[in-house]
Image (cartoon, rainbow, N blue to C red; front, side):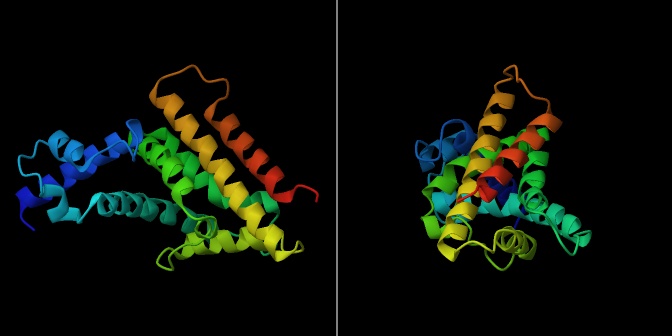
Length: 203
């Protein structure tokens, strides 16, 4: 790929991220992305990514690689016996770290939209190419393995949805520079506390 092609592809990716995060995935047209990237050729996005779903998948993969590295480091020091809260931390802490930068906040706002577009059974399904995330979901399930399997399914999915929604709203509020009641550390602890409570609630 030439330098010019790489530059065009990167520009399309950056514009798509911004529009998906601020305008919304469903409200963003392919033409919006192409125009925002300063491209005259309306087929530029299809050439590089195939479709709007293709560029959305490219955004997901870009950030999943970063999250995978953080979870791999956490798993390297993983205790033999972990509490449900520690299992929740595997999911939440790497995501909270993304709140520190604009790019990470864009991703969290996109994630907050895409996860609700998945079928229920897809929410906790992870491609094997991300083994640390796969293991994170596994330990989350194992932490409440005493419950019936259908309950475990609902608890894990509910926990992921709760944490994702809270992070997406926090990312939006930080981007809008709104005054926030909790510090970054307190927010992270609160998300972990609430997600753990949802996961381990008495039935």
